[in-house]
Image (cartoon, rainbow, N blue to C red; front, side, top):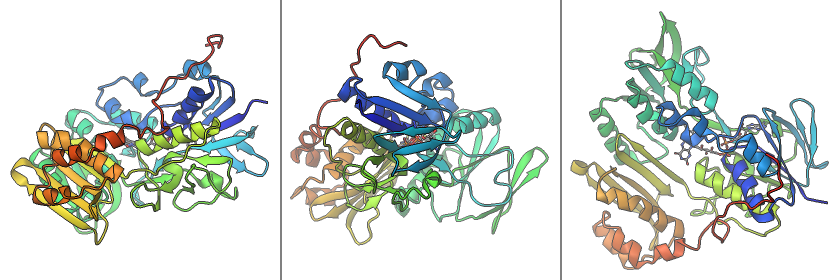
Length: 442
Ligand SMILES: Cc1cc2nc3c(=O)[nH]c(=O)nc-3n(C[C@H](O)[C@H](O)[C@H](O)COP(=O)(O)OP(=O)(O)OC[C@H]3O[C@@H](n4cnc5c(N)ncnc54)[C@H](O)[C@@H]3O)c2cc1C
């Protein structure tokens, strides 16, 4: 009997898993997909917001593609409970689906700051396609948008909001912007850059309430004066979609705990992407990395294992890269490890900053900030990522980087990091399109 694979969630992790199963088995197994939303990419929503792409371009697999890949679908249905003893999933309409193995890839959802008025009209999250549609409908040229929260997701939509002709104020409860992505010096540089380009920023301010004020929203704070906004976007964090697994017996911490093959505490139940708590490739610690590359790699590794290969996962890389008003801001690995040896370099006149963190002569974390067109930045973002990801020993090049943290290229070339990265494809082989029999109906 053909193996029955059940995939729950059609985001980056779920779709990469399906695609990889089909790359490996050419259509031999049964795949069933259950997903609350049609498959689309959240990461491209900022480009939909500023109209760089049409809504049709956010979708990652159409019904026709899924049919070509021989996937049975339950689209618009939610997983409601899992019974791993019976290998059965129950959906929100009472349907029960049996499986031989199953992937949980239900992603995360946006969480608003818990203040009165947070759920009133005009106060948005920006995480799903529906939420993006609502923000698009609410912004017009000249609108005053207040963004609550200055983390990575807020920064991914900042260019789009400004390009729509809106005025932007960012408020952040922490003493600095991007508190989980860069350090104090880096944050100060980015803040100065944004202010120079007309963005208002208030840090260390606690929002207490949002009131309606004659067609506008009035934001009230503990210590500073009110702000009036046409539209409020709360980018105040995300939470993995795990509640439906209560009572399943699957072991969970911040996410579903997974082993080096991304199996949960129940061996035929895998977890991937934003819901999975797996190994950090640099520190070895269990961690949730709610980012696209982790979801993609998890999905591919699990797909190969479901198709019968034995592929271990090396661990995910903490990585955030964002460009705001032509300033590149990126951090990799353990950039904030307390007690780690670190070199920094700052060139304010070039808006350039580096922090390089070490364990012995290996680079374990890095922050890089610089203008997008500056040769220092263009070349070095990828090279620093490679050095952290491979953990290559840099020997005497460490001293070179201490003297000049902006001269990464010679160390990158001398350490033959490219040669180490090339064979490191997730599955140990080049990616290829699934080859399926042509008799499949569309
Ligand atoms: C605006 C924005 C910009 C971003 N930019 C970047 C970026 O630049 N770089 C980066 O690395 N990351 C970025 N991210 C984060 C990235 O999109 C996520 O980390 C990634 O989508 C996670 O993939 P996933 O498959 O785990 O979950 P998701 O892509 O969220 O998919 C989850 C799927 O599960 C479904 N689902 C949820 N609950 C249920 C249920 N009970 N039953 C059935 N189905 C369910 C959902 O409908 C969805 O199909 C961005 C996110 C947003 C919102």
